Image 1 (cartoon, rainbow, N blue to C red):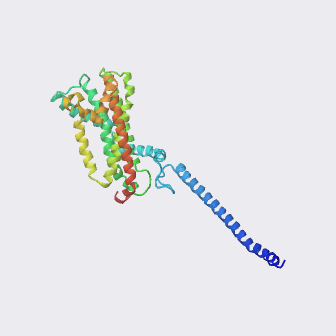
Image 2: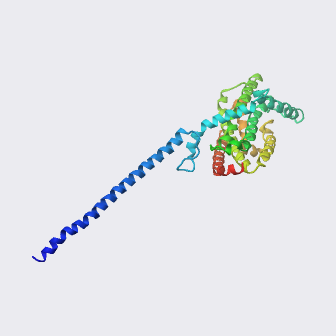
Length: 327
């Protein structure tokens, strides 16, 4: 009995010591739950901010939780700005111009008059079964688009450095704007091509519905060239001169004012490797030749052009942070 008394007396003391420990553990569990709740609410708030910034602000480039938007989101939110910038390019080109859009016709007509006279009068170049005027105009229609868009796209980021260095927006919009803006020149020259085909008795057949295919291939290559050369020009100013020289040489090497059959047989592979030749010959076949274009070649060059465009955009996004330091 004497041994049980101390044990009974000590039991309440042990219970009193364990009570504060249990209460502290319970309070810590409550505090931990509150911390988890606060963190969850904060995470949801930040997610809503990111979604709001990506949806409400159409031209945003960066978000609080990521360095860059995904490519699909970036393109979707940048499309309105690209259209606006393209319209601006057209307005600046013909602002305070006496002839305005007529320059789209005057320039190829002047080239046609000089090169056409020399080639037909002295070198006996023909249209290879087609009226020479129609054949040459089809080539000039494509070439005027290429030359104008690439030259403007090459110097676009350098010329618009006043806004590139101050405002964050997708940089690819600047070199891509001439690609869309020059479509007006292409459309105007294309209307004249159809008119010439009718006036000179060539006529228009149902094969003309395939015309958008070579045009899309052309736009892919021109867009890739504009993005790449425009980005490089920011860091290497000689690129503009190199591009101008390359365009002059390409004009001679590409069958713009003459037919592809004029190339010697052993060098015909150059025609297949040159995307401009493939596009020009595709336009001539659709509109003037009343035949389908070379689908395998168009598919090949369209695929290559799309890959080059993606690589050019990737390169631009890689170096865009350093542009403001040198632009």
